[in-house]
Length: 117
Image (cartoon, rainbow, N blue to C red; front, side, top):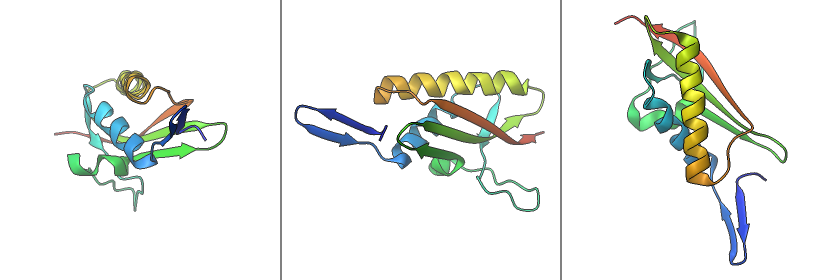
């Protein structure tokens, strides 16, 4: 699996929750992002998650050949959504590469809403 690092002394397994929190914290540093959204949307309404629940707005999928991170976000009104998404992708990729030593194959940004205030 992609989240296991092997060396001469043994193995290091990094959980999906740790990767999700790292990705969520990295995304929160980007301009134009109001916050992370809940992965489940009911009746078209999204829930804005606080700093303590950042991992709930991130879904990490790890298989033998793919490592994917999905970020569910809410952006600020008046910002260019594609620019915010590109900044998030670059920041998350940079942080995961520098912190974990490997980067994801895909980073998907799903915009759940736009905050007007």
